[in-house]
Length: 293
Image (tube, rainbow, N blue to C red; front, side, top):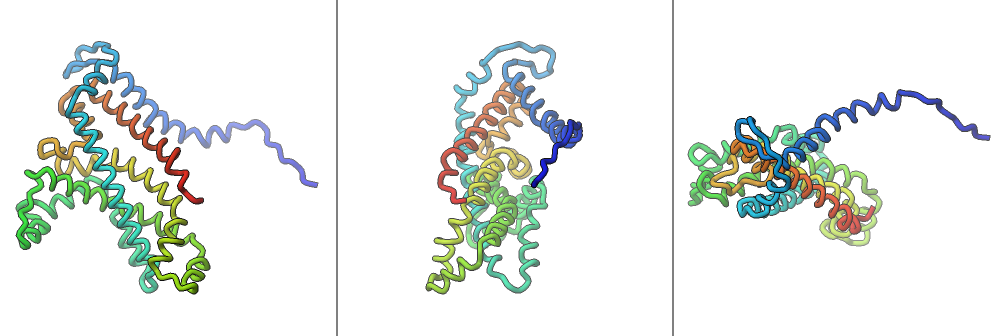
């Protein structure tokens, strides 16, 4: 006969979760509430006077063409970063899964970029493709292409997409590789015995079984592209040339800390948070239905 174990009242569970709750309150709930409150105010650049204006900051954003340009630019940027980083990571994971000799060394080299800070990653790519000194620019000039991302908006956006994708490939690679290792080898071996080639085995067995990992990484990469690419854009282009690489998160910084329009900046941060939450809910609501667990 099994005996039920009953624990008396204790403060230990509350003490164990208290650090995480404190971190969440201090670094998320409190700043978010302050941003929401600030979005209803109009404050002068010197902080000497503050006026409650209600939804005026949000109305001004909805009538601002520059804000809608930044919004469409962010969607395009996030889609390309997620697509490029996840595609290359999946390809590298599939290749690493087939390596027999020096597997750990190969995997370690692919993981290294994840340890690089976003600002350093941006600075690295900026020096490689510097219009005057970059080795990448020198190679492009050798094939007859004049590269100058400081003057060409398309080239600047291409560079920040490449830098942001490169920074995220290692993270995606780790999860894709772990997902591949979790797939029973007997399934792949049975398909090989039946005559299925590597490409067919990957398309019919490996990739469908990676759908939970792919779904998780899709959510993470969208959030990464919306928020964590700020350091890369700030180091490489600072939103330029003009505003060709100014995505929403950088516009929040530019309007708030450079333009000193704190009310508009706070309203933009609230809208940005709402957009990311909405995208995440949509992904879990509709995309997850196609995931095979």
